[in-house]
Amino acid sequence: LLVVLIVFPLLCRTCRLQPYLRCASIILSTLMINLGEVMPLYCAALFIPVLGSLSGVLGDDMSIKDTSTLLISGIFNNTSFMVLGAFAINGIFTKCGLERRFMCFLLKNFLLEGPAFLLLLMLGGSMLCAVLYSGSIVLLVA
Image (cartoon, rainbow, N blue to C red; front, side):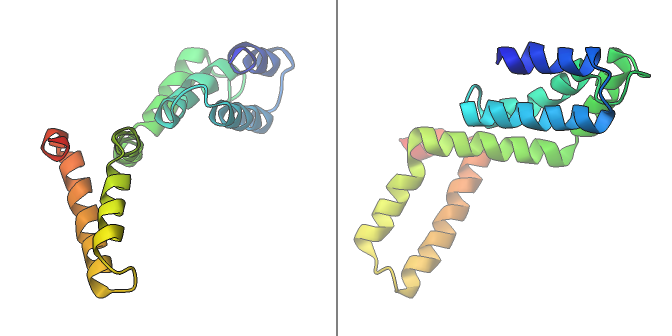
């Protein structure tokens, strides 16, 4: 994390790197954060505008404030919130083990090659996603 927060942005600012090389350093930084599992995936996604502002990814002509304003306005839209919401739902599924419980139930009670298995898999997956998305996780756990 020290390399990502201090070394890469300092290297980008002091060596007068071209903007495409600064973008490459942000990609490398994000990859290092993900591979090192320093923070959850959705936090790493939120961290990209910070890295872009620190590295001056849009060039030396723009100030840190202008760079951060432009990056944040470009990143936070409806699509990004849907993706970040999907990461959060995935984290809930993994932490509670709901997908494993549901799959064990299906495998124990239905034939894998049968049509009921596929139908219940699709309907159950849709139901679990709808319940999690609506915030009614308590109903499933209870």
